[in-house]
Image (cartoon, rainbow, N blue to C red; front, side):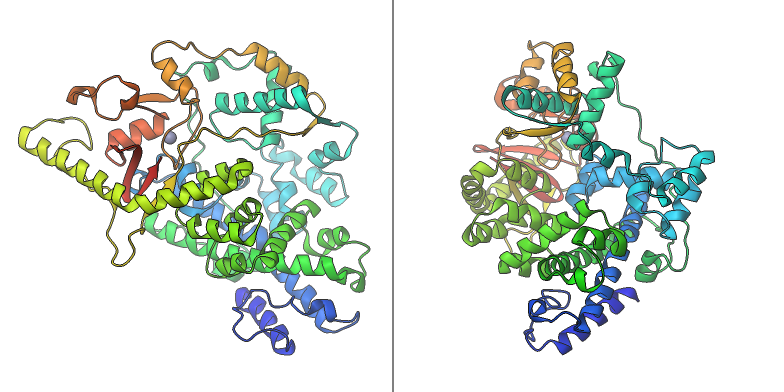
Length: 559
Ligand SMILES: [Zn+2]
């Protein structure tokens, strides 16, 4: 298996490298520790290059395999696991970026078989192929592949490199940021900056935002759930690493496979991250006949320079913080590690974040990174909340049970899922010796607003200004006031989706004496509201000054 081959190369390097401590776990800091002392022409450098290629070759293949498994999971009912949407499951349950899944799934579900085969045979890079679905017909595939092979520049990169980008400051930067925020609210998804910019420009060019986006009663179109396919060749690195593809038998099987793939992906990425950083630092690419680091990663690793620098930055963070490095070796996903390294300015900060990192939802970690200016106070408040969390969860579960018992006696709550007798148990299962098992915490702060300069393509500023003028949000009377105060954000800490379609939920139902007071009202997105809460798969309990969200097998305390 290739994993073992990669590891084998790794271990061989270790054997020859007397400086490496014996207790260093495999695929950890190894190859690299002593590389700076190696002279040009050292034959071990040749193996370093082989290792880098092996590690980078598996990249796209594993991601495609995860995405293909994801396409299967997307068709299943995820409510019994306490996830309102496929995106929430990917982010929280798998540590996998929903926007990346969407991008890969578009290719997997497309009929561009020739493009897929070209990626599989490493004729064109995956990053280029991802641009094809939606832009290319089946008949245009051959020309597209030939153009890429002939060296046609990436359309997005051509724009970035050209003179068409602008750096904006002050009010202009602020307009773009507010435009992006409004775009995300209208689309109801966390779009990456570039996608939000493109969307704004498209609306600007059309002269209007589609009316259905502005009408909260219109449901968005259903997602594409068609079959995903990929040429299953024997030398596909994913086949080499994980065996030939077979359709998962059920949801459990699919999740099990997806987690195993994620573990392989994380180990591979962490090892590659360290390696890229060392090669860059030691200028080893010169000895291999490449003029620059960028030249090497592009030609030898089929990797964009941007990706290489991003992965390399993760490696630097790992080297700078031994604690982080250890956490990654113990299974902390690299993307989470990268977020933590951005949050921490000292090793002490980092240690604090590491103690809480397993107990904050991914969305909460993203918010913390966006609110870096307050990282220290956030970590302190998170720690304090974590200390209180087991008792709060305990009381929330008792509170819910009392109500269910009462309902059983009086036959109230009929028709309200999760409120009547026979409702399924929610909340963490007790684990001996670990009071925090299945418990996470999140801060009730509003979404942080960033400042500073932004770099955009020309036209984005005009589009943003136009959008801010053209769209006025619904009125602020009645429940609109509640929505606006919540910034149209879903209160579920594992979702936190911002959408105009957000609904107002009574923590205690009106039928059971709940009031319209602010204290009893929360905003939830339609999925969390209708599918989770009113499906009996999530409960919100108010305990003291905290909201406790109970899901099957876990809980999140928000304060
Ligand atoms: Zn939600």
